[in-house]
Length: 263
Ligand SMILES: [Zn+2]
Image 1 (tube, rainbow, N blue to C red):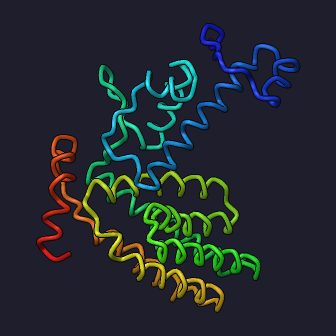
Image 2 (image 1 turned 45 degrees about the vertical axis):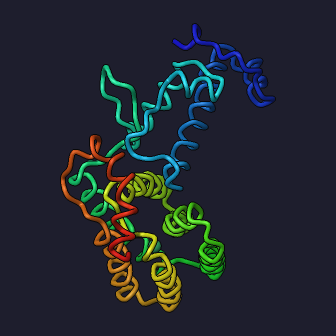
């Protein structure tokens, strides 16, 4: 089905290998690779809060940027939509998703349930090496905060939770949480969070959390996790709104309003 949309870019070595060995499958695997790259880059930009909810994802622009056909772009957009990161309304240009208040609450519920499980698993099976990795990650979070690199602070903050899931050793769960983290990044932007003002405290809690895991204190670790995630959720103003219409206006004016309120 992809034969009429051959990409013009020269294939990489690994791709030319598949040209010889896999024949017609080549274009399909190439497209998966390029679509993967687009999905990853878009997700990464969302996690760093560089890509805002509602931003248009034009097929032509993405195709030009990545040197791929619109079919490849569409494949990437469909995957982003499946992960809740893109809105694909028929007859309209695709855009970065704008989760509703209901979706936002569901995402937080799901995240808490999954991370509670991760916490329990980690208490029972995490090794010294795992704790060292968590501490190393926290160190990079603190370094980003000290350097005032906010994009990195946000991404690494979510990254701490992604690493916990990875260490728990369940790939499906890790992938699901990764998807949720990107959706949470959109929710944080859409519902005017004051996440940044909580970051130092959240990082301290990461440290406390590692100590509780290491001490085998399941109950206290789960309680801290719930407080920790609850703090992020409570810092949001999740109310139903016509987000798509007033987001640019709100973004433009909210900073001034915050300043005046001495935030
Ligand atoms: Zn955290």
